[in-house]
Image (tube, rainbow, N blue to C red; front, side):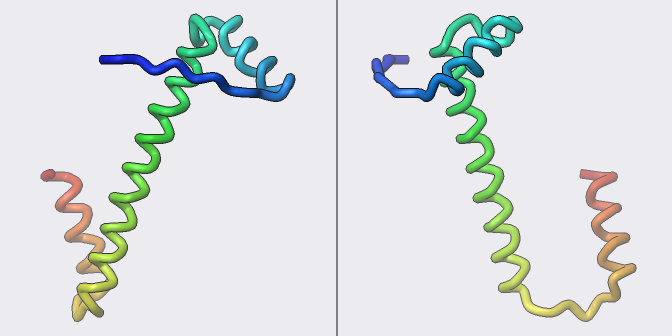
Length: 82
């Protein structure tokens, strides 16, 4: 994968935080920490998009004629059997 060099400006507190994460052994350098943040943000945005799609699908499906207990049992069954 090709890499792109970026220059960023951080506050002293942010720089100290990154250095503390490196000192703890979580990351080997600043770039690794920033790349990890970007990956986590991408993942979170993907999960949020999936959730929004599910909410929209639920709203679009209209009201259910099933009882809450029936809906709950069906959800538990789906979770148990994939």
